[in-house]
Amino acid sequence: MDGSEEDPLRALLIEIWDRFHPGILWWANREAATDPANARMVYRELLSGPPGAMGYARRLWPLLPPKS
Image: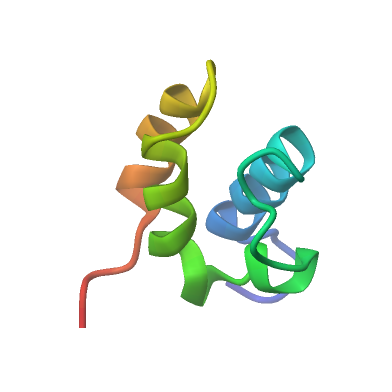
């Protein structure tokens, strides 16, 4: 990626933040919640979230970085 293209993971995290804050993403500020390094934490929050959250979890799953 050359910097001119938007990272799909970060774009989805921003979309999730816009949709669910402060409902389930109350624990973090926007910068932390949209940081790809925190994607697995966001995913776990979505699994127990309100209606519509599971759809976002399904979209997020294939973009998650491998566990270290």
